Length: 173
Image (cartoon, rainbow, N blue to C red):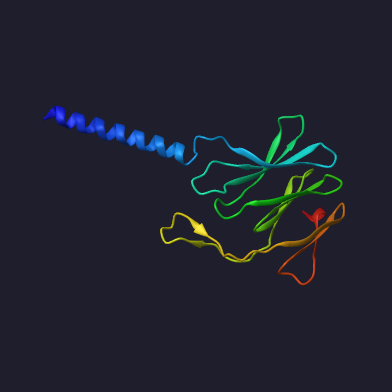
């Protein structure tokens, strides 16, 4: 009887280990984060980049700024997994401001002060799935029609939902 219990216990433990190991590789959790987008600043001092982290339900992206030639970097934002993803990185001509354009936000960062402002492009709410483990968003797609730096301390943007462009003063944050 003791041998049967021991055999069953060992079988259950080994089966669990095999299933977890296979799942670990199938879902890509063994992979390292992958840099998917990288843009140097116009003065070549900084680099803005996006990292895709391993995930069961991608995208799972993080936004960073680093100093070129040094091992110094800053995390700007962790985007919500499975909802938000990067579309474009835009640097100001003077390399003081970087914009991370996602499908939901403009994330504007002053590189010198490292102050960040997050501007919502889509005001829809996210909704939980019935199982409460993942969430979804509306299927409404909002595109940036125009985005321009006016001078070193302000920019103008307009979305497909806006009648007129909106101006932002980046020196205020």
